[in-house]
Image (cartoon, rainbow, N blue to C red; front, side, top):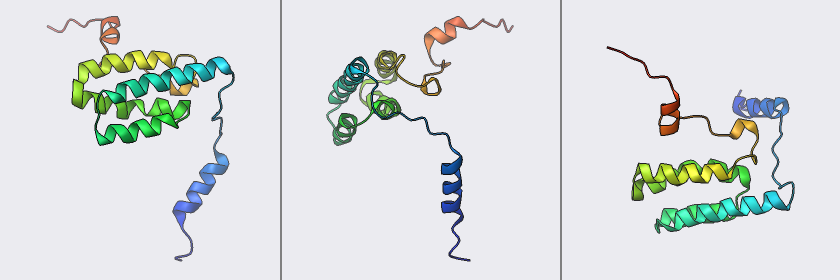
Length: 129
């Protein structure tokens, strides 16, 4: 049965059963200005690289909504880590991530990372001797 494509059927079923709560437009002027501040911060970080890949990322950042900007942080982190080192990139990304506070649904917020110094210091130390 070549006319029966299970991938399309599965996608259709998932689309029917999914709960879509994605909001693509900002609620108010304050949220719009905060989104624009995030966009400018990300563009400032991208400009530090100057490569063709950075230009493509900058183009995507200019036209992205808030949730798309959130997901571009990983690509931005990788690009900055290659040119400035992982520690410097992580520090800049932590600052950027704090700008997203109270703008995203709870499912899109950062989780504590064992790579983060503050997280490691908050964990009880095990005395393994």
